[in-house]
Length: 268
Image 1 (cartoon, helix red, strand yellow):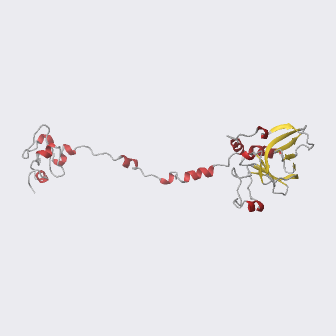
Image 2 (cartoon, one colour; image 1 turned 90 degrees about the vertical axis):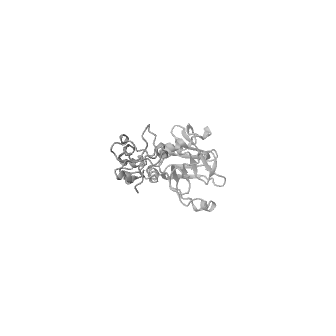
Image 3 (tube, one colour; image 1 turned 180 degrees about the vertical axis):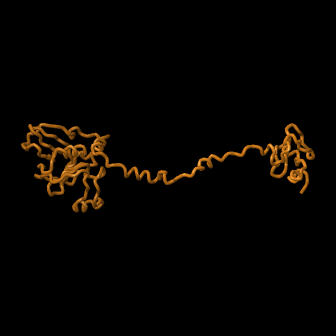
């Protein structure tokens, strides 16, 4: 095709013509189909040539309309221009697991301090030193079940008194025992008698802040009874257990350090 206004005019060394004033007035360059833009200030008609001073000696594809610099790479391309090593990036799913695995067991003292936050405790059950004339020698542990107190007898007619939780009706007991073992953050295996009453209980639970035995346990002879901490501090001063003696975690940790294996425990 060699009609006016087509790209063949450019290749045939003839001046390019605008196809119509409508294209020229709209500012179309016509580079893709062989049309040239109108020169500023000139009214083009379908037969007017494009002045050579507008484009010089350049053809349509070398015109000013195509003299603009090539656009730079898109930001997305620049962002991914460098190869990334995904192996060195943290796995968003693995990170929480790694943090969880790295966390040590909560510090017992800190757990004990936090245990009492927001809990209104009867001041009578707070640990304190009191006068004591029960007749037992120093180092003896005396558990006063009706009063919900545990005493650690001291020299000079004194004792450290702790608030405790005791067995509910039908589960209280009395007698003389010795501390046969001590455990920090003990595991808990409910005895068969308890499982028959509470089949919903786990068969075994590892030690930790959620364990019902709390931070420490002092085992009493060959019996199933213990003096232990609790993850239910609101039960201190109440009759709620199956015979074990409950203490605040902070208190049982204090007692644990003071009472050796072999110490006498009198339950009244």
